[in-house]
Image 1 (cartoon, rainbow, N blue to C red):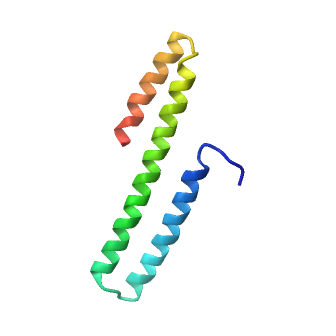
Image 2 (cartoon, helix red, strand yellow):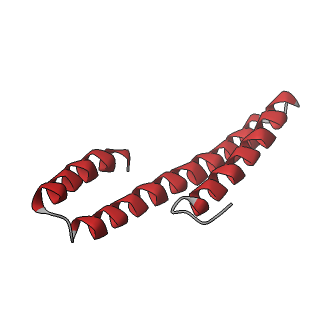
Length: 88
């Protein structure tokens, strides 16, 4: 895969996906609930981290672009940033 702004995020999500598949197998095997819950917590944190990285990267790129954009484009960028921050 070639490097894109999302390369690191994709790697994180693939790792989390593999981890989730392992958790499903744990549940199918009837492993103890506390073990499964602990692993689910780890996957949740990994996904949360990927989401935050995605949003922070988007904000940084948008701010860089809006710094040289005409004022109407800059205002549109600010509106977009306000929309995306609700996912933090």
